[in-house]
Image (cartoon, rainbow, N blue to C red; front, top):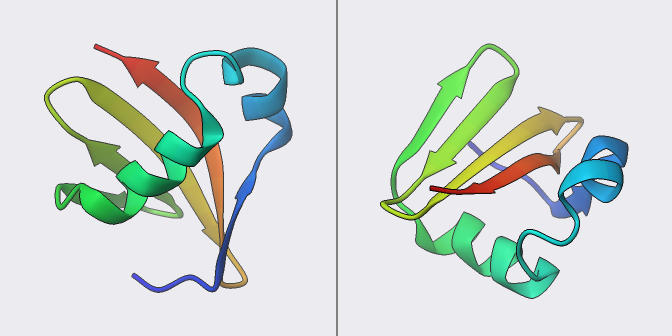
Length: 68
C-alpha cells in the first residue's frame, strides 16, 4: 500500500472530527503495523483505535476513527 498524501473525507469532518486530533490520526496511520485491505478500503487497527481509510489516486482518505 502506497500513498502520497493523507486527507480527511467529508464523512470524517462531519461525524468523527472530535474523536482524535488530526496529528494523532496521521501518526497512527504510519505507526500501526496491523493494516488490512478490503476492496478499496483499508482498516488500520490497534488495541485502542480503529481507523477506516480509502485509497484513491494515491491519496489516502480517512473516513472513520473510533476509540475501542
